[in-house]
Amino acid sequence: MSQPLDEESSGSDEERCGRYPGARAPDRRRRVNAHGLGITVSEWGDAEGPPLLLAHGGFDFAGTYAVFAPLLAERGWRVVSWDQRGHGDSDHAALYTWDADVRDALAVLDATTREPVPFVGHSKGAGMLTTLAQILPHRASHVVSIDGLPSARHRRPEPSGDERTRYMAELFGDMLDRRRRLAETQRRPGTLEELARRRGRMNPRLSFEWLCYLVTVGARHDPDGWRWKLDPVMRFGGFGPWRPEWARNQLPSLSVPLLGILVGIIEEMGFETSREDVEPYLPRDSRIEVIEDSGHFVHIEKPAEIAALVCDFLS
Picture 1 (cartoon, rainbow, N blue to C red):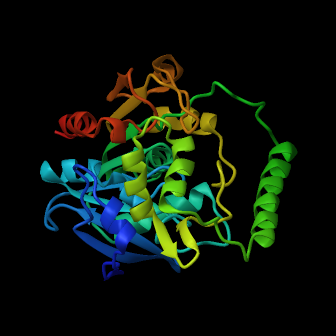
Picture 2: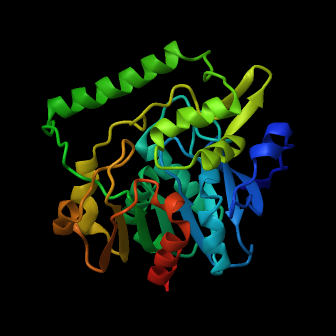
């Protein structure tokens, strides 16, 4: 079930920084009930157009596609993105796991169409949709991974048997302990510019103008300042027991065409994946493109180029 959402009002900071060349607010927003958790969905493009599922990366939200998504919509796609649990305007959860994120993606897909559609994702979002395409291949027509193909460059010894059971139990226990400690906390407030500078540490190649714009769509303005709309419990790798090599080893089972977009400039948020890392594991009907002069957020650095690449592949 989906319910329409009202647009939020804007204040003086939003008027000053809430515009960016090419950026466009979603044409529609709605809520999807994902097994009791509220997920906020954003759409760009004609409501009767062919759907395309677009998943954001960790610590991001659908609004980070404000330039990229309209470019896909201009090519005729109905672009459907969503704030993952604990991110943006979606509900916070007691526990965050990779499997739960995949189930949420399926809930959004079910509330959109029952026909096979292209899956496009960045970073963690790409990995989630690749997993979903492996589980339910009849629901995906293509998969596009924007710097989301896993590398085993930092591989750790694989636990097995009882060790794996203890590993999973320790991770879940740590997550629940963290939830208990931080149950009543909030993210640290600041001015709009302060939040943009903090974000710049994770996005060092993106302009300050873009980062300020991002605050206006991904943070809220409370009486004591701006704060990111992100569950304080969330942290890097905070999506439960998951390792990049697990996803890499499953790649050969993907049965739909795959476009993997890799980058040449390594950043903190990226997987550091090279063509050589993944070529031995690629399924049939795969294509790899390397954008040498861009970093992890290549769809923000070069939105027109990546949108053209994606649409060419889907055509």
